[in-house]
Image (tube, rainbow, N blue to C red):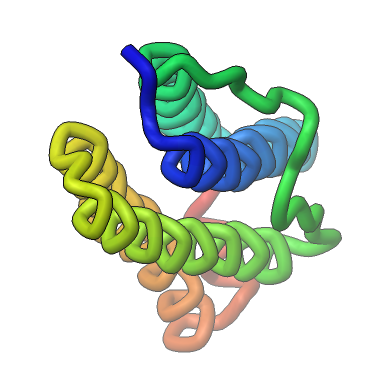
Length: 155
């Protein structure tokens, strides 16, 4: 199927965010594992898998629309040095992804590509309700119980 070039470009922009988030989660999960924070490692490794699934959906849709997925570009990659920095960096990526998803959803509506829009709405729900919400909770816990107590709970 021949898709709208503007939508394909926007989907490639989303793919750049998902690939960056995937890489960032992968590196952070391995850092957590190396530091002995097994609970954080497990959760962030799960987030890596989710981002890989999001990227796969975007790639499939781009190909279906007759486009070429851009697997080189990464947008928003920022590796933290401490647990709070890593959590905040991951949250920042999720906020950027949510914003880009909303913009692309609006674009799909103007171009009457409702199938792509519906797929993106599902990704947005996962981004806001699962990924960003959990990261906000973790940063809130650090503020409420202190970093040392938080880190101890993650071993």
